[in-house]
Image 1 (cartoon, rainbow, N blue to C red):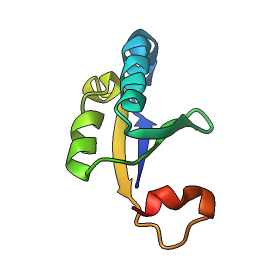
Image 2 (tube, helix red, strand yellow):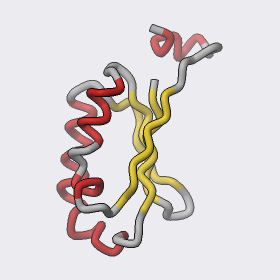
Image 3 (cartoon, rainbow, N blue to C red):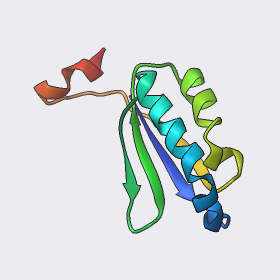
Image 4 (cartoon, helix red, strand yellow):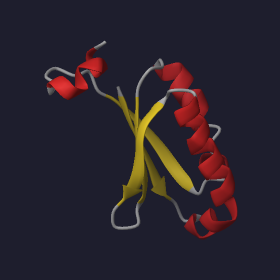
Length: 95
């Protein structure tokens, strides 16, 4: 399981012009079964993604395709988490 943070850079003002491409990239992440959740980092710091179902190399390559990453609107950080204890509703993450 991975947590991906997309932290705004100095180029944050360009986010509006790239938003359609970023949203399409998010949609593709869900369609490919990579993303479980996306949301905003507060207050207005960027975005966060919970990802599962791919190896790190695949996820890194996909994150590198995000228009926000390509145009350096955000800095991406991928944190890998190996679950040690899970609520039964999240047992699928242990695989």
